[in-house]
Amino acid sequence: MISVERLSFAYRTTPVLTDVSFTLADHARVGILGPNGSGKTTLLKLLSGTLAPSAGRVRLGDVDIAVHTKRDLARRLAVVPQETRLAFDYTALEIVLMGRYPHLGAFEIEGPDDLAAAHRAMDATGTLDFADRGFDTLSGGEKQRVIIASALAQLDQGREPAAQRTSQRAPRTAEGVLLLDEPTASLDLKYQIEIGALIERLHDEQGVSIILSTHDLRFAAQHCSELVLLSRGRVLASGAPAEILTPARVGELYDIDAAAAAPLVGR
Amino acid sequence: MTATLRRGLPAVALTGAAAVIVILAAPFIGSTSISLARVFSTTLPFSDNVDAQIFFLARLPRAVAAAVVGGALAAAGVILQGLLRNPLATPYTLGVSTGAALGAMIAITYGAMLPAGGVALASLVGAFVAVLVVYALASARHRGLSTTVLLLAGVTLNAFFSALILFVQYLSDFAQTYRALRWLMGDLDVAGYGPIIWALPFMGAAFLAFAWLARPMNLLSLGAEAAGTRGLDVVRAQRVAFFSASLATGAAVSIGGPIGFVGIIIPHLVRLVVGADHRLVLPVSTFVGAAFLVACDVVARTVFAPMELPVGIVTALIGGPFFLWLLLRKT
Figure 1 (tube, rainbow over the protein chains, first blue to last red):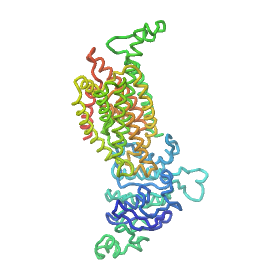
Figure 2 (cartoon, chains in turn yellow, blue):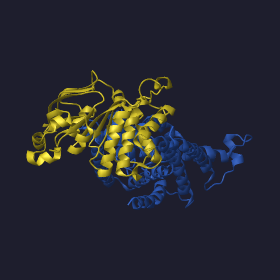
Figure 3 (cartoon, rainbow over the protein chains, first blue to last red):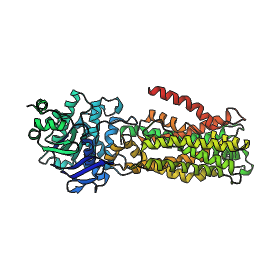
Figure 4 (cartoon, rainbow over the protein chains, first blue to last red):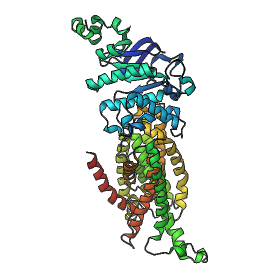
């Protein structure tokens, strides 16, 4: 569970987020929805601990994320940025294995457990076929899936004991929170649909909680179980998509006429 | 262990062995030919064995110096390229060598009373001053290190120190200017093992840091933020990278002067063969850089024998065209 308590953030003197509070249940699929400049990306950076808030706090479980060590936090919370540009050309598998960093000691080399975790993550994201290809040779959608696989490998606690596998539920080796910053922003429709399906599958089968930012109403309504509407750094509304996506509110969110917003929410 | 890492391990062993062979073979090449049998003769006492004296006292220190300098410059190049996320960065991009050069120029011009090794010491001090100025600029007004400011500060400091070097040159006499110019060309004519032993602690510390940095450097390739969300203490890794690469570069320059191009062409060639993983690129670059500079120094010593070329000219003659090829290949 993630709870955000009276969170504020300012770049120097410009306030970006003001008094943001909400609570997200375990295993939720949460969309942070808002127009450009509403503070979505900043909010994600605060949730991942990349930025430190000016006021308020973010709690993961019962503990303030500022208290976690970076490695601890990284094992429970992984981020998929909007776009990844490499300085040097690594293979897809090497990128995925970089997700194992918080699980390894300073001079430790990835062992069989880590390779198994990478394999599971690449299997789940359908990236095994190009494991040994250079990242720069992949298409935008493939790159995004490799980065998601890297995040999954990062959340993989390596717990896949054969004894427990027979127990009531399917094995859930990847627990934790996956943060995705505008996962579909630079993708065409085909890949948008693909990533949407992948996110739902990861949520259902891997047991990870999803928090994503987007300005795509349709995508948010379709793939998220909860939405947080963000406008000019403040929470406009939060709740289930069907309840809060009214023409009036969407009009207010995007600064357009409610009449123009109505078809966007299917009314 | 990844498949690439496993495939790359023979490359580490192979280049390591090659470096040792080149270091041991290089002293046999030169204007006076010496024989293997006589060098390692057990019947002749060392004081009467001219071949052994040439091997151990004249040529081997020089080969070892070339290896240490070449290995350090290549490894420092790898680290700085990773830190700046820019494959065209060199060990000299951040002003270390110009700082060292300024120190050396001042010592040559005003340090007539300095003991032997004074120029080397002054160059090391100059390098440290440059490093601290660049670091102060890059970490001011910024949480952690800004690589953009780091790059800009380095380039600006290079230009500024170059102006100061010219100023010192202007004030010096002909003999001093000649010595200064020769220093700037890069020369491995070390007299004995002294300079190498002296630089060893710096090199040791730097390479220890490099070993730790290999994996953090891989993560930094994703970008500082992505590296941070994977659990890396980015600011600490950047600091360690900056200071260790500067330390290795400063020590290398204090031995051989600002020898160019080793720090950029070797890492590039090595990446083409072993891939991007720094756990391979770092050791292989170190070994190849060592062997390369030893070979270049043999060419410098022999091509116009009995005249010697400064080794910096040889590396530049090879490195310049290579660099251009690299630029053209990218586009």
